[in-house]
Amino acid sequence: MKAWWKPRTLRFRLALWYALGGTVLMAAFSATLYLFVAQRLAAPLNQPLRADLAIIQARLRVEPAGSISWDGRAMPAAARWETSDPWFELWDEQGRLVRRCWPFTEDRLDRVPAAPTRGSDTLSVFSIAADIPLRVYSTPYPTPAGPWMIRVMRIHEPAADALAALLAIILFALPVVVALLVAGGYLITRRWLRPLERMTRQAESITAENLGQRLPESGGGDELGRLAATFNRTLGRLEDSFRTLDQFVADASHELRTPLTTLRSVGEVGLRRGRTVEEYREIIGSMLEEAQRLHRLVERLLELASAEGGGKQVHREPVQLDQLAAACVQELGLLAEHKQQQLSLTAAPCRVQTDPVLLWPALQNLIDNAMKYSPAGTTIRIAVAAGAGECRVSVTDAGPGIPAGQRARLADRFYRAEGARAGGGFGLGLAITQAYMRALGGRIDYAPAEPTGSCFSLILPADRPRGEGS
Ligand code: ADP
Image (cartoon, rainbow, N blue to C red):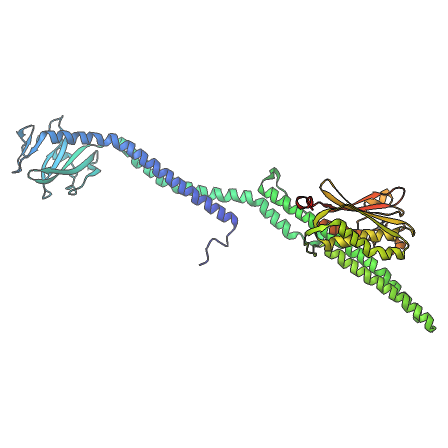
């Protein structure tokens, strides 16, 4: 069954719970108050009646035959009442009135009390005339003549009405208070939740086109304010991501345009007139070269997208950084030889918890850059060192180095330092390396080398607990 209040607003539900809670509390409080007052008021009121009963029991005698005596003297059927005597009635087992002893004469009475309920104690108020309310206590009165009832009476004090008045006030006040609670709860929750409504409206109007907009943050730093601030920070991050994405798309399309234009122009020029086979071979060769470059660029872009977008899973394992560096140096050694360069390795044993699949290309990028930007005949020094809870593999070359003003942007996508464009790179290698290092919980560092050159380092936290013994 569908709960009827489910589709209602949060405000409605809050007000409802508020009212329900308030009502239960008020009812409990009123009941406690009433019972407490009733007990406090009833005790002094009933006390004299019980005292009267004790006197009657001491002075009244009922014989087995049914004759009645008072203070040892036979009590006449029409009992005479003395000012000091208690008022009472005696009812026999048949429910017939045996004696009535009170100061009222027939002409003062509008009505007389009916027979008491047999066998039980009852306490009540009964008016025998408009101006004569009686407080009446009936109780079984076992006699040798049978199980009779006795009814003791006194004038009902007005103080006893206070209890009835209290009950009336409670019964009247309770619905009023509940109504006020409902109205108050509804108004208060409406007021408190208004910022939420404003936030909802504002959030609904935010799209990819106006990501710069922010939700109103209510002052005072309450829960809603914090929610809005958190939402705004998320929007800020989203905006950054969108901006980066836009930038990336713009940069990528710019980078792709150049090789595509070259490809088309070479083709068009080649077809403009008839050529010898040799010329065609040369044209197709340069078109293939450009296509290859395009292919590499697309691959690099995909690699960057997957490195930055968290597409790569990180599978950590204990890795000897010195051995990984040695393997990398060995693999790139031939290429270096081809460029008449040398790779030298100085490696101290150092173990890290990392993913070698991601660390390898990161290191390869650095060595590749060092070879790319250093002149022939120079040596590229690769060093692995441990210290201060970290392991560091550095690649130092004797190239031109990077001017201080350009270092901060090295890891930006498509950034190429002045004069580096001729190197044929896309400006993506360091961005990819940085993304890998982030994924591995490490970082990339740059320092100039002496007398000239660059020193790029990959820094990872050392695998301390198990690394020391190995
Ligand atoms: P690229 O593919 O252009 O090499 P990178 O992201 O690897 O892209 O490098 C960005 C830029 O940083 C390069 O264009 C180059 O200007 C500079 N750079 C990187 N490594 C070196 C180095 N070892 N020596 C000098 N400049 C370097």
